[in-house]
Length: 115
Image (cartoon, rainbow, N blue to C red; front, side):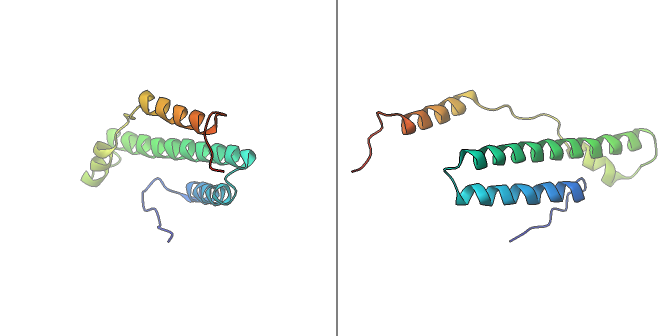
């Protein structure tokens, strides 16, 4: 099921990027052993995330300028700014180390396979 994203910063460019990400996800899911497709998926995913971040920041930046400049003086706009948080949660390095160890062990020569 396709949900329509109703966030105000979601525009035509972000919708197209999300569509491309969905296509890349489906392609890599049907061919999980392809390094090329996996690399392409991560590139598409990274560009999608950067696009979302920049679009969101531009939207809230403009909204903030409008509020500070006196152009927008309604509470709904103010509440949108108040609810927007710039702080990002950093990646947990412990989880990344466990992730790396798991796949290293999985693909190492010492890994036992079923005959």
